[in-house]
Image (cartoon, rainbow, N blue to C red; front, side, top):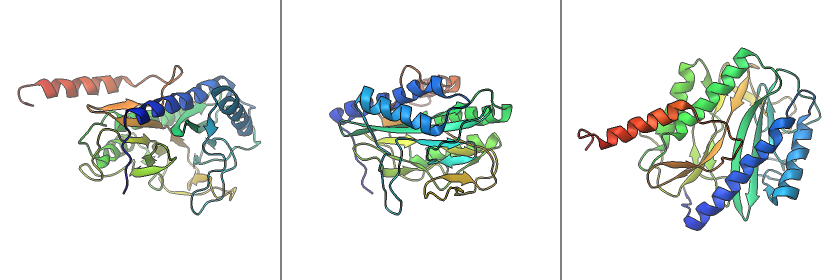
Length: 284
């Protein structure tokens, strides 16, 4: 395994790319309403990236081993689609939920992030799934610091999600990111504490749990496009994603912008608790 550790210049480049990726999602937010197609979302994002930001859509033409070239500038996964949904001309309906996953390249650096959107008024169950998935991502993020192992993050995400009655997709995971779209390490969203790679300053990777309302099993989508993945039981699935930097003392979320959703209150409470424990005589 070859993990790249970013120096000051690399971190600065990642910050810019991360912010720009998040700003694409900010830009799309007011457009995502019933009647819009995911192809519309793709066109809006492509034009914004290339004509306004001067960024390159990383997914357009991306072709990892064993896959055909991805044909669009972002991924849109609707309702029971788990990930990698290819935009199409089917209009979004009131009550749909959609994940929009964007990766931009700016000056060779990648910024990778995704958000869930509620299309019109969604059901209570759909809202809860999206909210819990966002919180599950933060359960992993807030534990990032040097010396922690990746298994600790996966364990936190899994136990939190399963306590809420949901399941975690196992076949897809987060990943290192930098001047390459996908780098080491793989970041599992389940696992055992004290296992896998030790976090060190300069590591940059995504945390992007895919959480299902039903069972965790998945299958290829009916489109047979080689990319789209759906839940086997046709239950709803949600995903959120941030790119994270391991700092000397903790973490930095690199994919934030003015329109980013608020950080859950429990994150600040957890960090205050950890800080107090570190300063206590017993901890010393």
